[in-house]
Amino acid sequence: MMDFPKLEDLSVAGKTVLVRIDLNVPMTGGKVTNDTRIVRLLPTLNFLLKKKARVVLLSHFDRPGGKFVPDLSLAPLVDAVSAALGGRPVKFGVDCIGPAAQDAVKKLKDGEVLLLENLRFHAEEEKGNARFAEALAALGDIFINDAFSASHRSHASITGIANYLPVAAGRLMQEELEVLSGIFSSAQRPIAAIVGGSKVSSKLELLANLTKTMDTLIIGGAMANTFLYAQGYKVGKSLHEPKLKSAALKILKNAEKNKCRIVLPVDAVVAPELKAQSPCRITGIDKIPDNGIIADVGPASVELFARELSRCKTVIWNGPIGAFEISPFDASSIGLARAIARLTAAKKIRSIAGGGDTIAALMHAGLADSFSYISTGGGAFLEWLEGKTLPGVAVLLKSGAKKHKAKAAR
Image 1 (cartoon, rainbow, N blue to C red):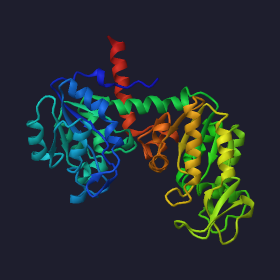
Image 2: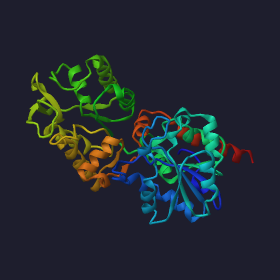
Image 3: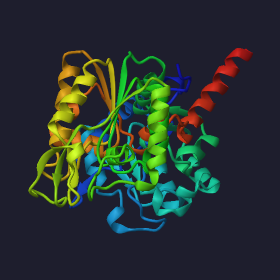
Image 4: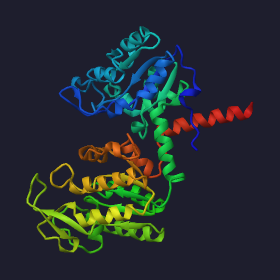
């Protein structure tokens, strides 16, 4: 088990607690269109508020490039956080450091919540600047990291604040670490991973690590085209990476060596262009026309994938297996999601999904609540599956090790 400090390890009553969260949520017209990330923060926030802590929320939003961008202010999120907290008032600070932030924190009372302005309005945040981290830390007594989805970054608010304050994982961070660490340590086997997306180049490390840890690896999306091409299939005008032919063949060879079964599509939905309602047809992967584009895997492939997964006990999914944003090329991702949902409901598998596009595909299919676990991490989830230690997690583990050492010395 991973050893890291948790909420219960710190005395928070009457203390000013800085909570790093991720409010980088989808918005349209100044309104939140999906509050999942906010709702999943409630266990941490409710715990702190019940203990009468003074809660100061720190978050980034989008990529303002280190300058103030009015459209990227966190101010519109105050109402969404308040609504998630059952209507509890949420105050707003117009900056995250300096006199404005200090004054807002000073006025905060026990059991109240304050949201500070976008951390990324300061370039020092993404640079991991120590002085910026120290200025943030000066606002509080305790630091809680509940932003797993941002913990693959060595940003000041992720790794720096812990140098100045007692630190612990929030409930969401704790849940993510306990579930995801179990993938490689205690998951029931056979275990399968589904990897989709567009480019092999963006997931080379992921694929290499999964061939060592998975029993079955299903590859879909445009990424599969490069593997088909490497095996000698014609892929027409489909997106693929010819320069990665040798890399794809090496992954296939290593998978065989590690007794990891790689499963590729056996048919495809081919269209002249990736356009909504574009005329398309289903064909075997050995009959892709020269002027055709593989827009989705075909029904025979979905059946094959589902059959492979039915033999497993644990399934991990990262990346849709077709151009799900464009109808009718969402059929395979929806079909596979339904198959996994049925296996999950029947308690035949434990299903874990992560990554922005994957979650978007599951929500599109109306099945986001039908999986055993949905990770809030995008890049963080990907890097975890690559076998990397995330900087934000490393800080927590270091603090856990210090606590364990201190206990042993008593």
